[in-house]
Length: 151
Image (cartoon, rainbow, N blue to C red; front, side):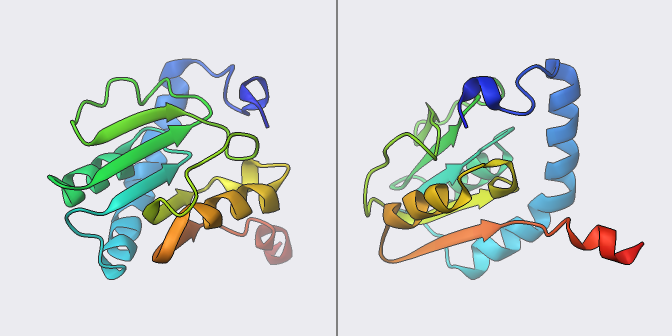
């Protein structure tokens, strides 16, 4: 998937920001509990793939400060540009086609990303390769296919 194929690339900023805000409101508490359970702490290097509105990236940057760093990557960084923390880098990045630092992160996280990728396995392999030995790969995805079975 490239920037032109991003499903919400043509969505007006206000509508897309509202969608991302609802996702953050619903999912951030569970995501944060999962991250805390992984032991995310000061001095970790973290990668947030498909960072969206940046709420998880901001939480991570606060959690790993002062010695750690967070890379917030997304194919479309329009809602990440204003994030301003000294240990937070915003990077325009396509997980399917752009390289990452191999073994460079204590934590690689994504949420509600893989369902948007035509080449999920390729993106997943790239994320896994970016995790240092002993680090964590935390993928949060929903299975919307079960909705049809419930009808």
